[in-house]
Image (tube, rainbow, N blue to C red):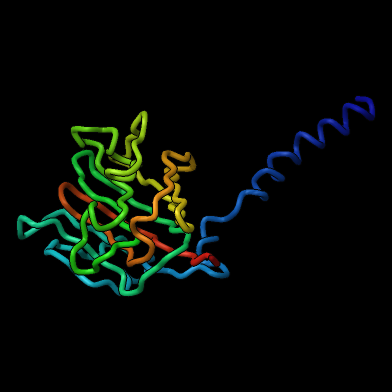
Length: 204
């Protein structure tokens, strides 16, 4: 084996380790500037709106039943304006859920009073289904989230918002209707699980 062949072989052997090393760890959302809202040790400190059976199961926040006709929400106690929001969730195929941001009324959470990154594979109008911002930014084609763990990265800065599902940007929006407000998690139907939520406030 000549010298050039040996160098090439060593380079190919090292390359996979270089790539792996460059991938940021999953725990990066707990680094500088990040605020943990939910993890495997605590379900966090939320206000409840509506009545669902939110509970912790083996470090995962779960809801699969409502005791009233109204949709149920967990609402953050703090308000946020400009931020990156990291959410890990699992949804059943029939789940109707969503991640709501900049809600204008902490006691009245809805897709008309907040921006909602939808989690709803079974929505009749799929243009505003999973990974869309309901009523504001359509998704095409709609990705499926049911039956697996997914990651949302939602960025809001000024009028500009983006939704990234599992590493793929799905929608982008410029809108100034809601400038600041709490984050909310919804249970409307099916089973929804959350295992990590972290937020990083951004400078204006």
